[in-house]
Length: 171
Image 1: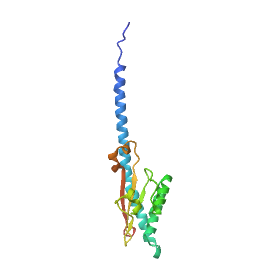
Image 2 (image 1 turned 135 degrees about the vertical axis):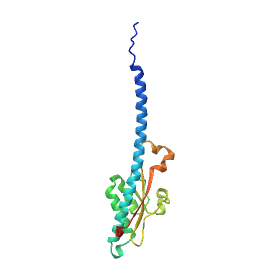
Image 3 (image 1 turned 60 degrees about the vertical axis):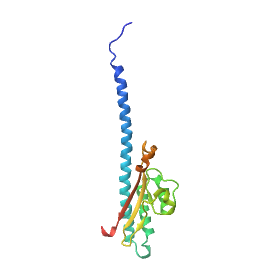
Image 4 (image 1 turned 30 degrees about the horizontal axis):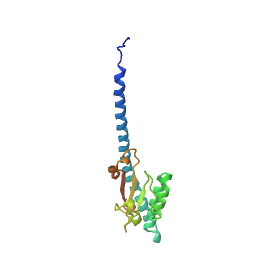
């Protein structure tokens, strides 16, 4: 039996396989980290813009139309314009100040401070309007991830509660 001395490929395959697995694990962790940070940043931006829209509605309203409900509806209308269609029913539920069935991952939810929202919003804040037209609100969003959502202690990092404060008349 003749033995060939060229067996270099037998060693390289396991090494390449180990490298590919390590890069795949790092890729998934990087993906989840990126989308967790992006969810917080997007929620913060949406909260500020919704607060500004609500403050503008408050400032532009006249007489009896100047109410917290008018400002709240303006914030919800702004969010409905930028959110995907599968988030519309939860925003409509928050507009009626009803508890949602369940908020899809990646959707903003406007906390009103109602007692039926305690499970979702806790004591993170509520929608309020000051007498000078300054609007304070809290948006909630859960980040879309591949792995982090299945790790129990990561849940607190995946849920973004971002505050929006704006006064259109002072800008």
